Image (cartoon, rainbow, N blue to C red; front, side, top):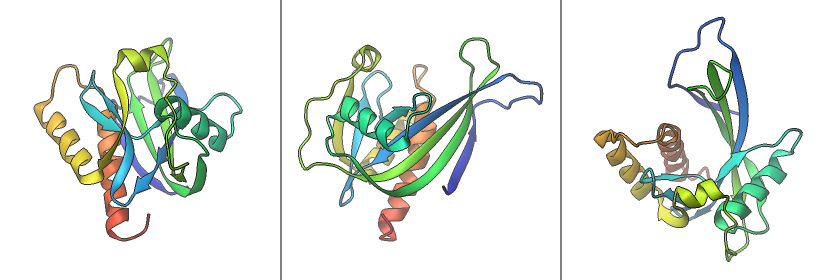
Length: 174
């Protein structure tokens, strides 16, 4: 898969204990509109997706995550889009979390079912929305410019992905 970018929220030392987490993210487009998640807690837009379970196939993980978060049905991966990796603050007994986000261009059924979000997603006030990619980028950039204290780290990755998607749409490559 094409490597898009590495993001450093912190610089790992050579002796750092690194936890690796794999995630999948779905790019579902209707023209320039994307199926996105709005997170009220952070006031940002992101691609739907999430963690890959141990030994789980990316296609199955993506179908599960899109169904849970957006109600998407009949998820079909058309092609890989790219990989973003990032080094983030740790979880648990590690020094660094190395997140690998595999992004895929997908097709879904024409209508969405009801999302089946997890408790933390409900608490974060996540909502699936169709939104023009340029509007999502502008919104996230405004949030980044404000530098709000409660801003999540994921907005950096998501805004970079949205920019790449907009470029692909402009070049008719999506």
